[in-house]
Image 1 (cartoon, rainbow, N blue to C red):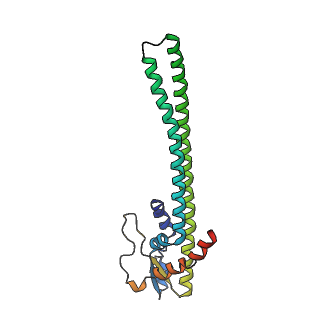
Image 2: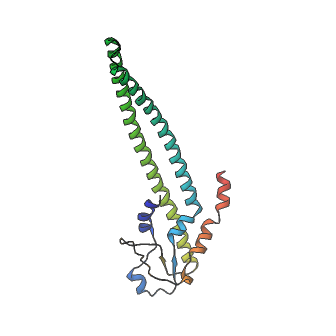
Length: 199
């Protein structure tokens, strides 16, 4: 989930380095750690819990499919031993050869279907993660904008944002400009109420 977060934070981050803003001489500037807001937002934790539950379900179903395929592999091994046994009658040997061919075909089909199924399920989970993350980041951004308007802040910089070289855009800012803590409190104020509703 974290690997999918980086490009989204880049696109939805609050780096407002624009000439027009600085030309207007911003009087009130603040910084915020968008990554921390995202990581510690109660809705993020809820979304991550659902992802883990979905992944556990997929892993369980995948193991069941693999168990069935392993049974066929064991049967193929047994049939091969019987076929290689020189003491069995030719007709019985032919029967085992036909059975092995049929089981091998069935096993290959099951493995092919399992791989396609696993690919579809993982793709669906990843798409769902991206959708949920976008929603959460949009909610956080809305809260940050409301905070800016309510507190007459002209410019808010995302202190967690990084460039393509993984260096921070914001090199230094005093702690007194950081509004992450009050924003995090605002974001999580309704956590208890929403948890009760979910139950």
